[in-house]
Image (cartoon, rainbow, N blue to C red; front, side, top):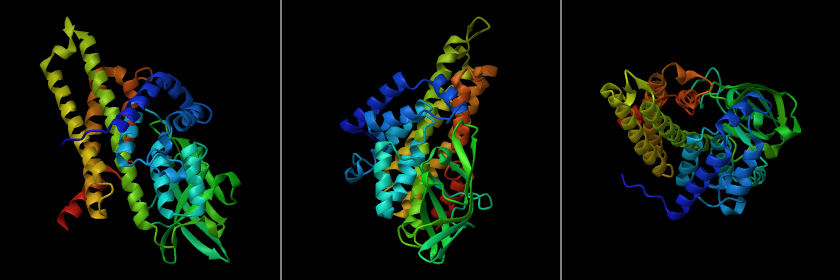
Length: 374
């Protein structure tokens, strides 16, 4: 597959990589996730003010730079390579895509805030009883005069503790709808139960106990949100696949370097043929993942069935590769692989979590099979 970046995309990649190499220290990041707010707000502002990446895939009329899926791939891979925990995919890809397609006045204002780095939007779609099925939800929205009243519960809303706004999915009489909740207004009846995830992200379970919203909170047409939600989920899946490629590149490079330095029986362990074969297998898994991500990215704007099939193929490939590369990297590092002091353990946690984001590996294997046979 011939996939060549344009000159502008290369500049974006190189500028972001340089910024992360000089300004994003892993040790400082790990300290930040365990204390205080759990992230580095100054880095987020730099993403907006110095790099402009938060609006890279958004149109110029809302403050973006008019890019598309390839720009998202370039950014996500670089962020994965540096193990960035700030919620780029959740806010600038998934939530921003939903707001853009809704074409609402309130959504446009928040989109401008995302590009400026002043707004962080998290999607609250998953529910404990529904698993990977985001369509069969229990949260409801009913009319009360001109207002909407939301009742239900969401689980694992990534970046919700950091967010200024939530996008909540709910059943309405006509089908599934989207609602924009301004957390700055501290809506009555809404409770966030925040926690740190295994890969050092911030997430929350959301309880909606009669949350009253005005009519403007409805994003798009009532009951017709599912196609946009499905698109956003595929966009998020493709982006985290690109992020995983960045993680796996770093993990493999560190493992190869460690194998050159670690000595056993009077020679570097990289000289043992069995370990060389293991690292070659890791390299092959990485190459297959890169090709699968390219396929997904190039089909994100295709018709829904084609897009879904390409994304599920990528997510299934990445799920297998992330598990294989992560586990073997830890094993080849020995007991050091899971220590806090060594970067490899932190990357392994992220690669493990990626397998469950925006649909598990099993979910995407099943969806790919279903799309292939229909």
